[in-house]
Amino acid sequence: MTQKTANTCPKIALYQPDIPQNTAAIIRTCSCLGVQLEIIEPCGFFLTDPRFKRVAMDYMDMSSIKFYKSYEDFEKAKKNKRVILATTKAKEDYIKFKFKKDDTILFGRESSGVPEKLHKNIKYKIKIPMIENKRSLNLATSAAIIISESLRQTIY
Image 1 (cartoon, one colour):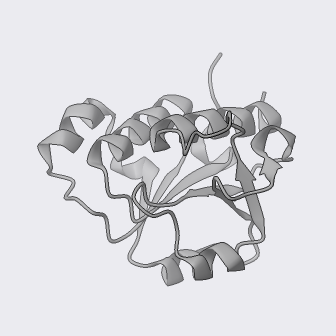
Image 2: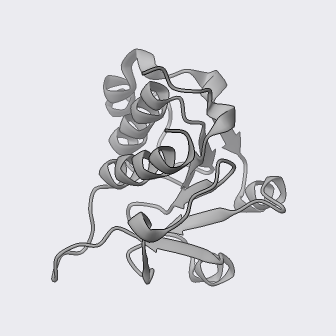
Image 3: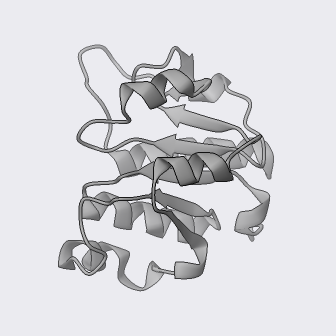
């Protein structure tokens, strides 16, 4: 089945990603699924990092990646649009959440998530339910799980 374009489905945003391999894997996922990726800088690595390039390979389509110089720039661009924070601290399971086509699903830094101020100010929060005593899934895995459900709900 052919996917619609990135303009007609939810987007993924990464808040100051700090592990190059995860960001590269998310780029591949977005490329293969036709999903827009948005990166809120600064990143904790350079796009020329060999670890990044090894995973991103030829999936690095700069036209499907939007960069924001700061969270403030991202916030201005998302005015009047829903931003959904994926966090282990959420109460609502992603599977029960009703996604919309113009949603942006925000993922925090691998090392520290998003700052508490952002966490408090973002209205919508979702989580992937996990068994007890497990801290979190890999960021790239989490992004793939949640974007797949959002696409299932909005375009399939």
